[in-house]
Length: 276
Image 1 (cartoon, rainbow, N blue to C red):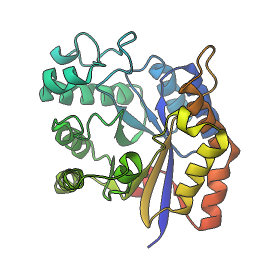
Image 2 (image 1 turned 180 degrees about the vertical axis):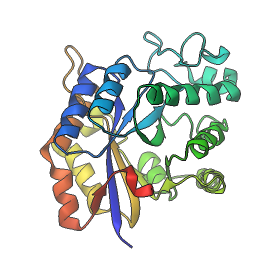
Image 3 (image 1 turned 30 degrees about the vertical axis):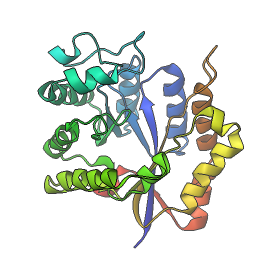
Image 4 (image 1 turned 90 degrees about the vertical axis):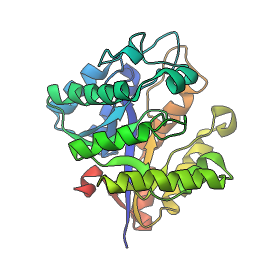
């Protein structure tokens, strides 16, 4: 069986620095996939760019905000999200109604459709639809994907959990199998594996360390379809710390080293169209 790799840039629409980086990578053919966050401040300009340049995007389903200070607005206006998408994990877990989640997912998709954007898959911001908060929002995500015939970012094998968490408890592996089954019975196509770097900048330290992580991931790409997602961005004035990781990821993608390593290893770089 062949090895296929989707290299995806997340958070299209997040801000101007993210948009400029992703647009540049798309234009140069250095990525073949991106995920557009409909609730983000620069979503409109990202959608306009995707439509004008005939680039398909994923809908980056988002039911949480990254901070309390700058909450993203709900596109559905449902009761659970009237004060904005929650940053507080407890509120998301204990106060969010699943029917409101379903309507929010649909509203974020329709935002793109109304702007004539071609949508080729769905994925999720911060894993809030993956069951990690104890809620069955993954059912709502799968139902959404099934209704629109969209493949979904969820890995069928446990490698992603092991890379993110280290020693994975048996209960989490069992939960993953249960979630995969829920998608399969609904006819939703999923990834075989998923890769992203979970480390903080304190652990990463240098560009070379992060670059090696992703190059090693290409080397170890399994048979089937793997997605590698990064968050490339240009530098942001006055913002260092974790934002620097995004800048490093942009530089890694811009260098073309991942594409070259994939070519050397016989890994086929593809888009989400492979699921059609």
